Image (cartoon, rainbow, N blue to C red):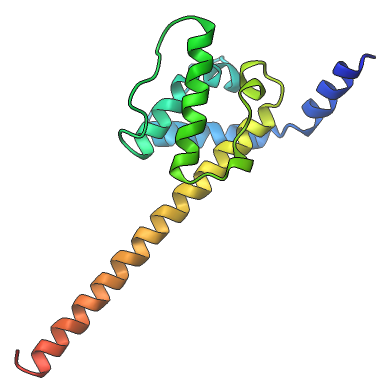
Length: 152
């Protein structure tokens, strides 16, 4: 067996199809639409269009323009656009897959890891905003109480 086959076999052995399914379901929930029936997860993501739409759903306008059709290099460009947007959104560089991981299907597990990292970042941002809002409400209540007590 060639070295490349051994590496591919090892990577395929590390792939967690349950995690892929969870990542797919999360993307579908965020976008509000199902992936095409019968099309493998990695094939749906491969042109980068869904990934770019995902980022624009999470933060409208984070991606100004992406390619919905075109040559292979345009589709690979979409993947790169997604990667840059994910980093800008707050995903750690180390958690972002390499373009070949998806385009050449070399490590779909790493693509899934990136989707999970994006989900954690979304959760952190939402929780931070919630805590900030809660603090503002508490501050507002304290200020209101202060003005009531001291007749301001």
